[in-house]
Length: 151
Image (cartoon, rainbow, N blue to C red; front, side):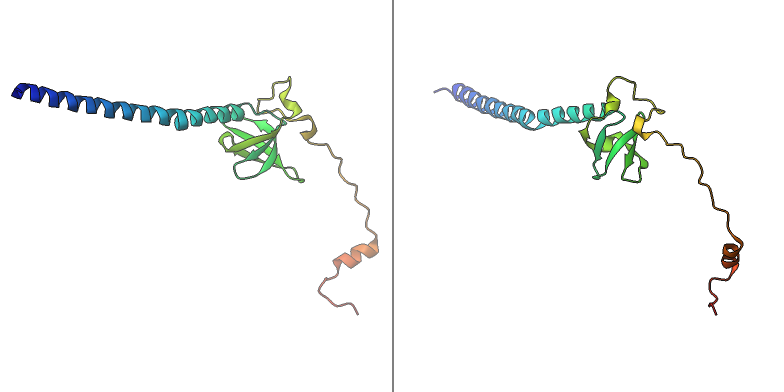
């Protein structure tokens, strides 16, 4: 055997091992893409679509666990109504975890403006309560010091 043939055989063997290692590395990266990265991007796209499609009247759950009904929508935030006292506060769109029920505000009318409110959320007009006229005895009792003891 010639010295040149031995060097050529050794170089070919090393090249084949390098190519095989590179193929294994590329296959591993491709497998990671299809198992981890692609499904994550797909889910992120669905979540962003859900957050951008909420309308007035939808009931949502925030990432903090607050359940409320959307009253107004803005570009990057929403005003939701929460609880029996109908307290309203503003949350950011990215804080929406899920939409629990689609409201009737999402059908038909343009519900994506700042001034829109759901029909049942309009402020109710109340007339002022009428006060009873106080009798002279009641006014005398009110003028007494409440910390004095009655004799």
